[in-house]
Amino acid sequence: MPAQPTGLAADRALLAELMAIDTTSNGPCNPALDVVASRVEAAGCAVHRLPGAGEGRDNLIAIAGPVGGDGGLTLSGHIDCVPPGEGWNSDPFTLLEKGDRWYGRGSCDMKGFVALAVNLLVQARDLDRPLALVLTSDEELGSIGAGRLVAGQDSLPPLPHACVVGEPTSLRVVRLHKGHLKFTIRVTGATGHTGTPVSGVNAIEGLRRVLGAIDAERARLEDVRSAESGAFARVPHPVLAPVRMRAGSAWNVIPDEAAVDCGLRVLPDQSAADMLEQIRGAVGAALEGWPLGWSIEPFNDNPPMCTPRGADIDVACRALVGQDQDIGVSYCSDGGHLGQLGMACVLFGPGDIAVAHRPDEYVPIDDMKRARELMCRLIAARCGGGG
Image (cartoon, rainbow, N blue to C red; front, side, top):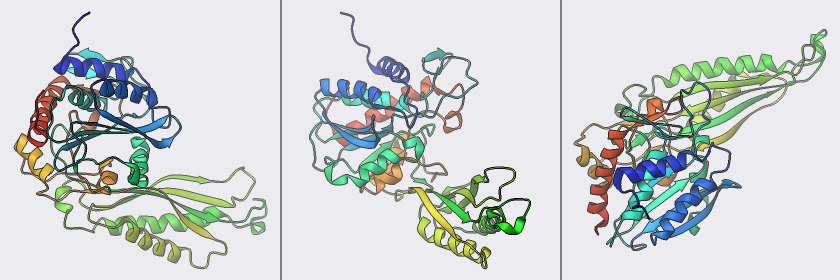
């Protein structure tokens, strides 16, 4: 029987296996989680399968070493990916090694780190403190799987509070990210024939007022700063953006409803609920005198991640790479929800977020090699043991 690959070769082999399984968000992820569960169970890890966002889309927790107690480390990732889309120069579900890169959907975001984390659990020996792995489904839809963990936290096993979320950061330490509240503003009109405008109330006219209010609020928020704005060099303020509109059913029918979907990205030390109330007030003022109803309907609240500078995991990961700079990012992760479980999280993983979600996604092989070295050092420091 041929020897099993180890180290970087094992990470490549598992990444190829996971990449070959289509885990597009909103579709089944369990076949990939089955592969993971089989490996970590065979290594003697405690494994917990937990309900996620829907059928076939579980969450998985695996723990190597003693369960409970102080210290230890949690590694976190998501198993789902965005759809491959068009424009690839290779099969997105087949790992292609070309030059110094591994190409394929999920190589960077984030099956590369998942493969590494699984292998680290499998290879761990005689740990003094727990090493845990948290894998979620449907992160790309708004960290829905991680939200289910928060909702069912009473059924979770004890997890180490220090957590590395292996999102692609080019191995820089990120302790902050913005939240993302998605909501719909809906304006009600009354249907009628367009040939006789007075026969109805055109909801689009109301939506025009709403869009004006949104634009004014967007401009106002560009001047808002918080104590953590300094970590967000490119966009140091909250962001409000209309992203999609719907209205009307036919050329000759007055629309009786018009809606706009919006995204609100707040800084980590701000309240999305408070800002939404301010937006509600602005929309209400714009629609004063509107003869029919309107509503604001939150869809998904992906909370910000705000780990204090000086948290153990922040200090430890910065020390590994000699980083003093505070870095905040405007995209979201599972770290916001995991923070609600009492975890101190940093984003710290191989690959560049700039190539995620694009054709010909890739992770540099040197990043994967370096990530393995750094995670081994971190595990040794926080969990003890050997292997």
